[in-house]
Length: 334
Image 1: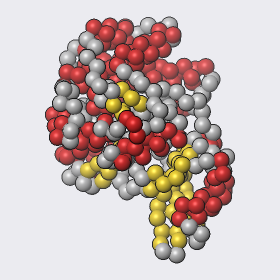
Image 2 (image 1 turned 180 degrees about the vertical axis):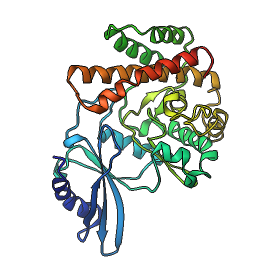
Image 3 (image 1 turned 135 degrees about the vertical axis):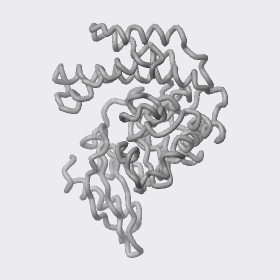
């Protein structure tokens, strides 16, 4: 049930549930963002005015299996609520849908104003003031996410450095298609694994594309579906991966900032001072290896016909990009 008329019908009752008997949904449209979930924008109008909302919904309203890679929309909404209460830059979740809403697995959040498209954030004049301060703001935002009290969170999977290294190496080996750079990277990482830090909430996919940015800088962290408990260094490194610099390789933080600013903002906001550039680098190398393995997984899904979409094929080809990135990082040239 992804037809716009069906969504509109479900939102009729939901609007009244959220905003009162005189509420009515308007301006419903599906947004292009959201590779794994449906994203719908709509307004709720009442006699007192209009307010914007976002419906984040499982494809067709059907929640697929919950795993360490996807925690499910109800849990995701609970994580966002807990992180926001702890001071994190996160959307306001207004409603978590249940069966009576007729929309399937979904939740509603207040619509924010800003940009998520990396090309615009990195190049447009409207973000010229944001770019110099964005790395420190991202560091501060991550410090607040990591400070979320564990007892306020829904149940989440644990995923530490060695656990992830084991998991992704097992996936890589299952393909039985050796890639020497991947083999070298797995050995390099095992020989240099950092001492684990006390586990915290980890966003899991904090990067351009999943953060909203306004003219003055960071607005909110979005797309919390990969949240888990683990080493906080993971989040600080993920945004530093070459794949998420979008061609601006001279700026290690997202293509817009410096690592010193990211770590400075993190520490100033109360983040763990033991996290240093060496630890971030280990996790950045691992992140590129992990992403490369994920790309191979998507290619296999396309090759087998399990998901024959052009998107899966296109992402699958990006495994070769991660090979180059890994080669440059392992030789100290990136």
